[in-house]
Length: 92
Image (cartoon, rainbow, N blue to C red; front, side, top):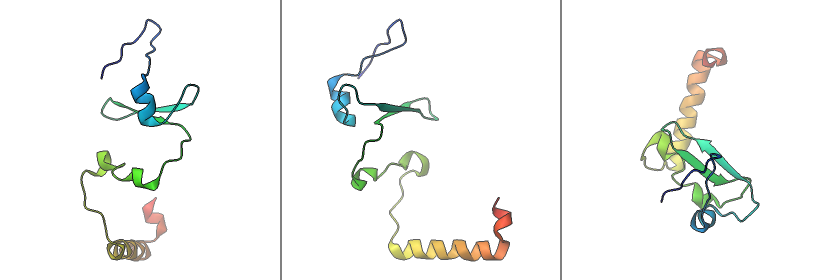
């Protein structure tokens, strides 16, 4: 899908995109510039189900398998142990 900029540097968001991000006329949207030069457009202040968060950080971490609760507990424990060994001042 392509959008065309007007002379004023504006473009029109079509109905498909509005429905996709869950907004209607007059709703505020948030546009975030991404490091790769692309943009992320989302509904501002829109509450979404937690299930939609799956993969939200894939652009940062890549494809990784989800951690089990046991793995999370182990990682947290290791983190606390390491902080105890080095002290909080070393983390700044």
